[in-house]
Length: 229
Image (cartoon, rainbow, N blue to C red; front, side, top):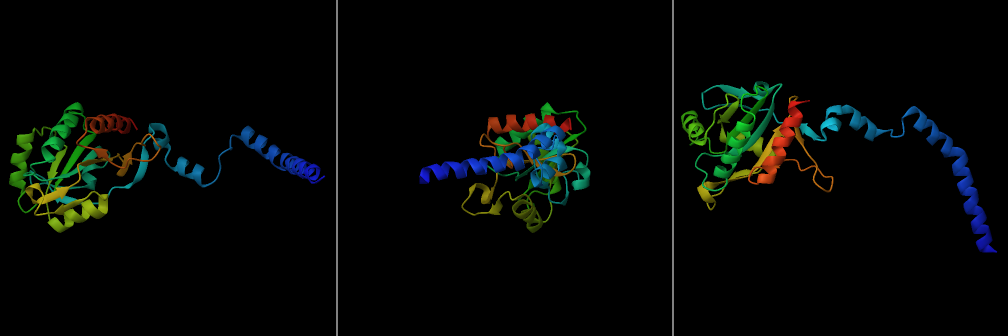
């Protein structure tokens, strides 16, 4: 008897649901407003992100530094350009040579495009003066006028790396060369936003592996997408 009443109660709930909600769902389908609320607002605010499939992480931190030619470089320098940001130092004996090689490959793929640039920020500015960076640029094969090797105050640079981009940079006497830093590349769009793709699980990768051929391949693909936005 109890089972019979359970079936009757369940049938009544389904009937009420059908009467109240099905007409609303049909109406939304007709009006093409099936998805509503905050999620729709978030998607609508980043139409280009939906087109390219690249996540908008947020605005890149502001900075102002001197490049290898003694020129003041800041965010405005890259306004309207897609660009990469990396942290390095010229005497790095470990990961920097790999990053340099991969960044030169990226430079060469987009060479001549005025809407693409690179910002390489030293984490050892006391040694990496403008003169040293100019020599280093020649050594590694910098050809683009939009590739700036940047130097300035060390505390200021560490703040940009660790708090601005959340890309680790620090001093360590036990590390090769006396410094440690991330081997990742940050991708910035024409509007100054950090952008990235999602991983296979649907989570944003945030930054691109500058030491791995797959990371380099991925960032080159996504630079092309952003250049076409």
